Image (cartoon, rainbow, N blue to C red; front, side):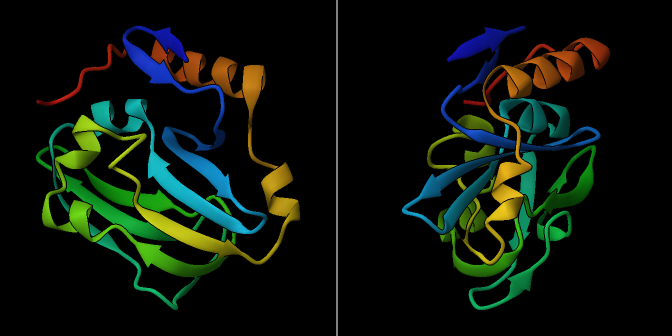
Length: 149
């Protein structure tokens, strides 16, 4: 785990980074992408008060929303890091969205997507490349991450 400005960056995950939108991905088996928002994203959003996640069976395209978040100061999409079909969504975060602020890499997972194009996984950032890009966002946004209790 790399920590920069109190922002946790797990080294064992893949990352989809589009501007300030930062999403993590964990591959389960060979074709399931577990998706969530990063520590940076939850900090930038502030206290998340609502999340709408695409329902099971819905097809999503890379870069298009798999969910929509709302906080007191921000509303916007959670982009799908890969194309595929939503096979599961986290009903717990829909009931209690603040979980995303408290545990973005654990209980705060958002959706599971059955990957339809494995080539897209190769386009996700990992390791030092991901860490460097996330550090650049932390610096440019002057972020110090904090988790809500």
